[in-house]
Length: 85
Image (cartoon, rainbow, N blue to C red):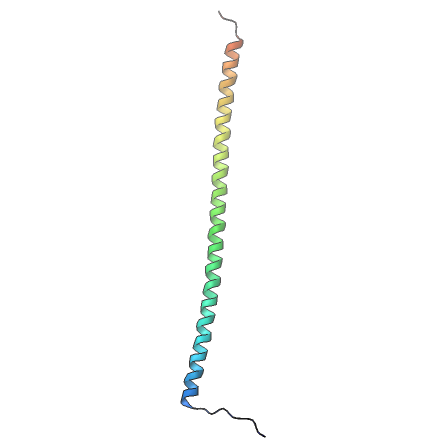
């Protein structure tokens, strides 16, 4: 027995075009999802980096305030240790 040969009809031609178009659209959607996910990850990474910089700036500001407070405490301690004139 011979194999069945697929006829080249106009409807089969249209069917092939529709199938190829669906495959193409599916591929585009998959790639768009990948781009969206990569973009989201990049934005999250940038946001985390910016928050880290904010934490460093905040820590530096706190250190400065702490140094100023220590200087004032040292000044008050020195004033208390001086004999009254």
